[in-house]
Image (cartoon, rainbow, N blue to C red; front, side, top):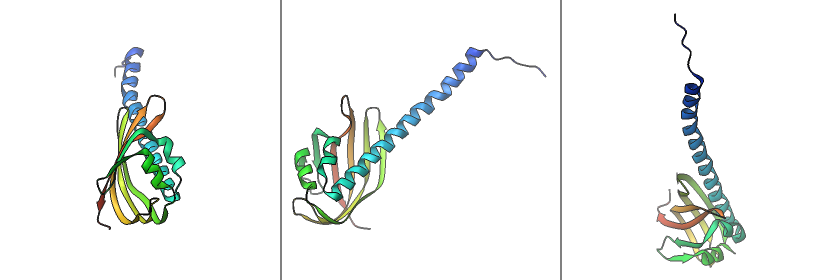
Length: 152
């Protein structure tokens, strides 16, 4: 049996090569969990009518396209959050894909109640949110889109 001595530099290089992908993967997983947590916080704030919790996670240039195809910005979305009364308001099936300094979150929302603008709602939706890591504000949602779907 021959004993083989591997140079330290080769061993270190092999460890670095293996460790780098794990570090990048861990970072993506951390971002996915963080964005999913922001989505949960947003949904809870909508249910509770707390626009002040949602305001910092929306970019100033945020644009929403609702299930009826109407587009509006941050100010109107926050106004709609205030004063809502919900029997049910929850998200599920949240998935997040990360692309460098941006991320796409998708999921399902089901709500029954009255929106802050007085609109009666009883529907399910699929939604897509686009998140960007801003230089000074961290992760913010820049766009959201909802599509009505049939209830389960």
